[in-house]
Image (cartoon, rainbow, N blue to C red; front, side, top):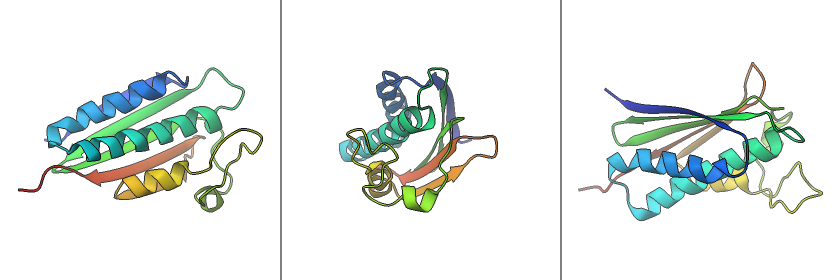
Length: 142
């Protein structure tokens, strides 16, 4: 049987650290290296932060849903929100693109996620909002 977790957190900035810690702790059963755990934490941080900052502009009532599943030596992670979504995903995936040009945002969130994980998929949800799906194979190879 695969192991899995599902979490729903209020979309507030202090929960970004909690989300990254929960998913990293969940991944420990795969015996990852310190670098692999760092990659997961960073990718989850970027996805959760994007949901909070971009998914719910000027709103305090949002939620971030986190789903993670371990299958063999691979961790599958989904970060979802019910916010405004992204009108042009291919443009948003480009390095240095930010919808918050009036703020100090680097526009590198999706690029960071893609570089630290084995796969990244970004899609608008039919119910509204965004779903970011990432996978990474983990563990020390013997």
